[in-house]
Image (cartoon, rainbow, N blue to C red):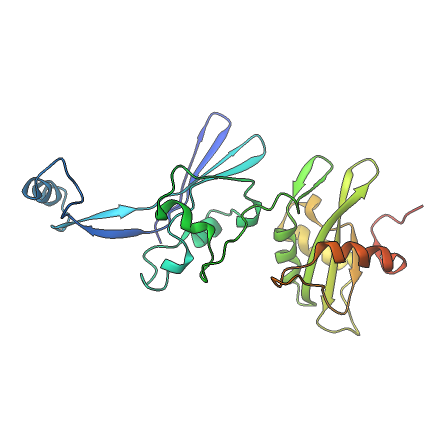
Length: 247
């Protein structure tokens, strides 16, 4: 995988997240120089003749507390047939320490395949990047449920996890975790899960409440059904473990 590059322009952080490359034959690719001239330039640079390396480099700009992804690369579907040469956006984001689910805005500079296909998963399905409707704001800080869910799923006592935000006095919203335990007879406690999440993420992202459930309600797309989770929260209010008890 190509190297991730990060630099700052004033208060703006810019991260170049490579999506790989394609070796392109010279024929009809570069129109303002002859093939002989191009090969001479390639030879002078110590590069092989008759083809050029066309790189794909989406950019993440972090500014004003938001992460903006400019272009999305060629897409995951290109990773296998290219033997990992391209379609590497997700791994590059991970290498840069950026959660794909924490992208707030996607800007497409133009609609060529190498700019838009990263919006699709390997099966060709449209995926949402940075679903702001799921985000909640705790004490002025944005919390994206996806990254908290992944941290919870890393706990050895957790089989599945989902997180939603709910209104709370003073700090605006808090996180409620719904957990399916690996051992129903010995489920993890709220204190254990908060400590685990805080070890991986910022403390404010750790859930303030926990409801242990037998299974997670899912949508037709096999994603956590957040509307149904809110219904569960109301139905099983007395079973919720709370960091700060109500009343």
